[in-house]
Length: 157
Image (tube, rainbow, N blue to C red; front, side, top):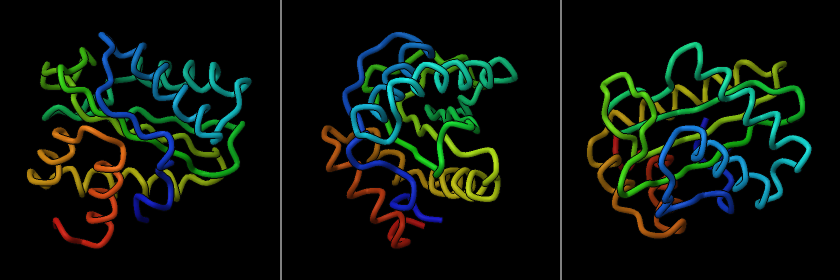
């Protein structure tokens, strides 16, 4: 699965300036709403589901990266977005560091394979130091999208 299969280009946010996990999850869900990928009715329950998932263990996986995700019955296809924070966000990460790169995924419960393949793609690409460094330096959503396309074309790994 490629980034272009699930990341909403219109929902990508750079220069995100929030302080904590809940605020950034709210901001990313709002970006999905504004891009037309979810409805207002879905937004709040998706945020609640992601925060509930975070209670099981932080999706701040280390090295400045978090992948908040959930399976949610209100969506019919896998949707996702990316956010970049220059100053970093307190996300209760496994390594205790602030998070600068976030990938949010929301998938239908009856499509676990898609959810898993998207998570695998994200984790595989995030192992590449150059890819992560360039993403963290991205100042505009178009820059992020270009890097995602390059990753999809195996230009990093």
